[in-house]
Image: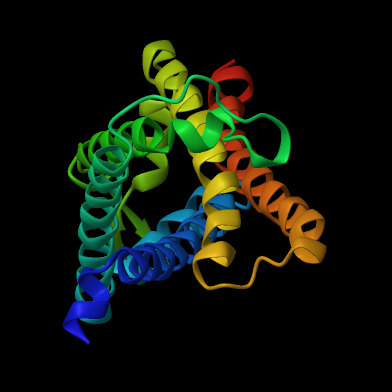
Length: 220
């Protein structure tokens, strides 16, 4: 079993599995954040519910472990691929057999996404701590922090760029996930591409709606 997961095929399976975990988390996180459009209290109550109890520690442990495995496998496979092809081909294939810009820059995209995750955690999870009362319960005022952060044009610009990179990474990653699990037959490719694009666009638009709303509308 250990030999399988240290092999190229095994690492691709691990990347697919850990990518699936993060894809589910990203969608759930985006959906939960949309509560800011309901009310500040609803958003704060949602955030408070997430950190109440011990299940948050198990969830964070799974996410951190998945991220570490995903990053390790990505860098390991990248190094193996470069070592297997030390010499550049005189001509690279185009069309369906050719690698897209997205596929050739997945390592760069992943590095930017990782840096974005770190800065995002520093800004929101470990950022300024405001408190508020919702239904008689004192909790962190994440809505106030969101408004404060997204009033900064520099951060909004960085956030938008990061989410566009994330969209590209997710779009290509979802397609690669099906390929890693051996489910990407030729007849399924058009449908998988549409699903990948739809997922990536929905997640990106959902996340971007918050800074755009705060900066362009709520801040007026």
